[in-house]
Length: 67
Image 1 (cartoon, rainbow, N blue to C red):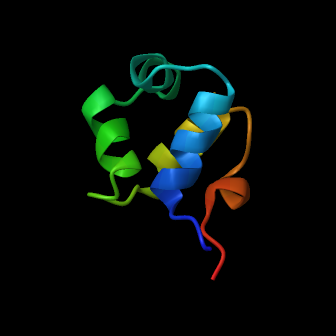
Image 2 (cartoon, rainbow, N blue to C red):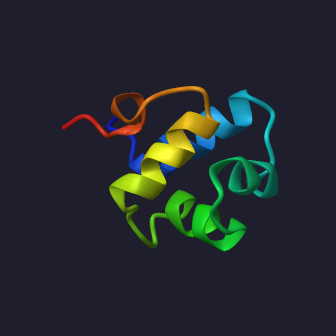
């Protein structure tokens, strides 16, 4: 089954043992922004997604859903 961007972000965050707040601080975005992405309520601008990927020690390609 194909994972969404939010599912991939959440899975990676949990794998690293990070809370939403810790990821938000590392990525320099709000915790509510991370919650919204993980819930699939909003997409991410490329600059913010780049910061989130960097904070998760990965790259955008690893987070992007595969069709």
